[in-house]
Image (cartoon, rainbow, N blue to C red; front, side, top):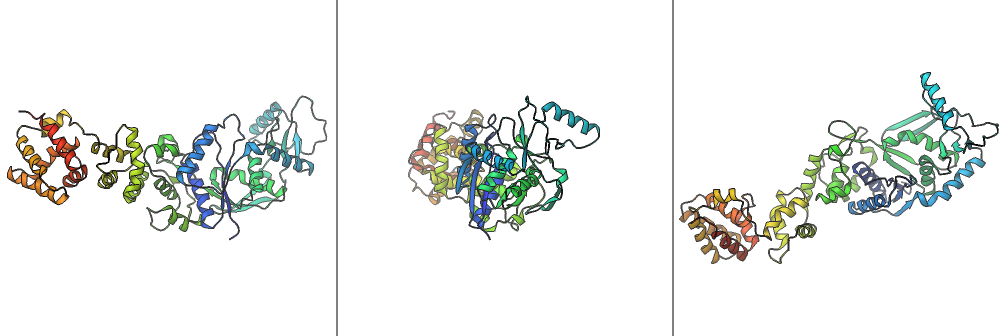
Length: 465
């Protein structure tokens, strides 16, 4: 395959969201799959809406996701001189022209067309006009779209697309104030950056014939296009915040793993057999545009959470601990040398769906909890107190491993004629402040002997006499 060059070109008018992240992933993976280059371009010519905060959010999101780019970021705002140069070239070649139609003229034209049941469009009145330009109108520059023939391209996802040139009016490529327009800047950028494959959302399909005509006028080679179907919410409507689709960095803040989010995004409209959970390296090895479904994908927050849980379970305990430690410290929890956090993680990760959940679950290993009053009334009774005192004494002389701890628990339960849960539940309330924990012998082992004894001692003082 040729020297592949793909690009991701977000507009910095907000954070990077699910749809943009998936587009970036597909463009990045295609370049990586075929040993090509992935270019990041910031389309910031909309001065009023573009912000540095949005640029930073996009760059942070790309960095967190691990979607490394080989070139860029290029900023359209830094390329205005180049765009004007190309506009002048088209004017000099007679492939563009100044249009002096006023806003009121154009509105009247559109109203007339609507009244006749026609599609509103510019009628080319200044295309070959010899009239003297009006002095009170700052002209726009329009591209001379071909009047005959059709634009045909083989979309790598949607298949063959043909558009009659008579359906396309003369596109404005420079506004009255001289600033170039989006569709034109995109063309010049793809031309200058030698982009071979344009992978983008299918909301851009209608722009493609116009862009191809401009590229042809410039004598440029035409990239291959692949328009990715949009993502819908569960109700079939276009994806929005009400469907649970938030910015990429919010998923990070909520405790999702980047590899899990990428795994889920990859499966939104793309598949490799029945594979559900896979690494990004596997995805790159498998990826191809032909496997992208031509139908819209549906976003399912529950499925994303499940995918994240699978990646949490599969992740190395020490690596997870490195991610969880800062979250716990943010909550004011001091991480003592004991218990070792990676041991706590190993105990809890099977039950955890996110890093935040894991951090909350791990907190009571480092900060002794207090059982709530309802739990005290149910489990920390005067009837169970003798058994807890006997257990405290036995644990004080027990070798600290799971087998010995389990043996001690069963021994005390037997001696006091208790079923095992009748002893284990009060013990969980004492050491964990809750009745749901991993296996009690494993929990005590990881918590550490002295910590267990200290917590029992602290709670024995509060038992009813």
